[in-house]
Image (cartoon, rainbow, N blue to C red):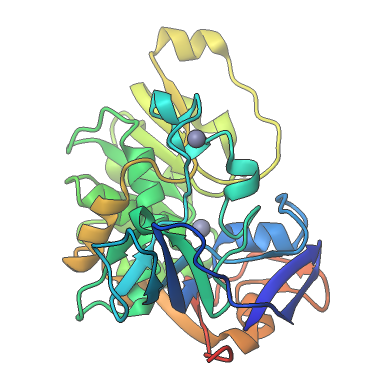
Length: 349
Ligand SMILES: [Zn+2]
Ligand SMILES: [Zn+2]
């Protein structure tokens, strides 16, 4: 099968790899149909996020069950499934204290980062990481389950009230999915982006009663014209950091989900005195099933969020559309696309 393999920064290529085998009784072999391109993939390719060389990239995926181990009773060949790629052992200190998204084996088990991922034709995982797809949900739509699950994990860390005023910085796929995850809890807010194109897309696909704005100030003014402070700011860009704390109401939350190196400073006295909360969140923790439900019920308009789809062979073009030009070794913000999905083309069949 052909697989998109990470070798080193800016060096990724389609390589022939053997089809993985079922080794354990609870393993399942999945024929991959579609995998979403994630900001993490762009970070890995551009050398900003560490991955293990020689790993197959890709982790937001759906496909068909091809074969099952002898102990698997809930799935059979032909079942359409979405994959939870956040492997955890269940035995380590982190897993046994409710932090499975930080399983101590992550450095060798993280799908598409330190363990072979799904930008290819076949993938083996345990049955506990697979969720059946209803016929009305396409493989492409199902690829949004994993990123949505990460958003729900972030939100679970907040004592959220439906009347929270919320601003999300960055109207890319993470920002849009955060707005829907929050809207599913009754929260209304604003998205902020510096790109006019992204604002136009966000305006057309944002949840009902949500709006898109060019500046943080405009968004905060819209939500809280008198006090000019909001209850929650979600920064998906990694650029803003703690400088926005003064724009939070007392008791408010700053949620940081942009994976980007940087330095940020804050006044501890202000955090204490105004009961502010600064929260980071990565991967998903006990929320995949809820994300699966929200996609299945079409509460999240997955079709609108996926703006482009390419065959895996065209990965250069797909990444370029997202601002990651592999040949020229440049990574720039792109306004052309929200979410892109790569379709596995069956070269291993
Ligand atoms: Zn991802
Ligand atoms: Zn563990």
